Image (cartoon, rainbow, N blue to C red; front, side, top):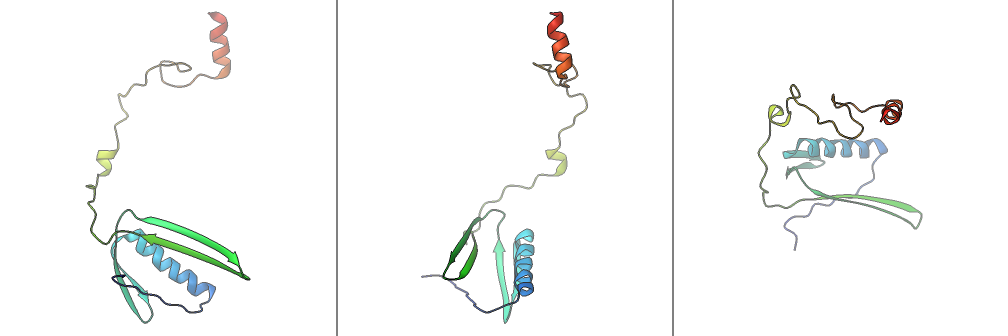
Length: 122
């Protein structure tokens, strides 16, 4: 048995369908506690950072059916601590790149012409 099920079927214009998807996309982008305006009411959800998705397309009997489904657990999931930009960026000053095959001491790759010239002089 489901804890809650909300289902609504109705005809809408292409623009109304786009508006619904836009509102859903904004809620997904925001995450956390969100509210979706669904006539005749509002649906409040907690959307986690990670979720599962399924997209299904069926063609038959003169119709196309497109289903987009998102799933996530109702129990709160453990979240990783947010990292600041300063923690994720590594300083590039003073960092050396070891010279390897096809690289000179500055860490820049040599052109094919430079490689051919180097191999002829060996």
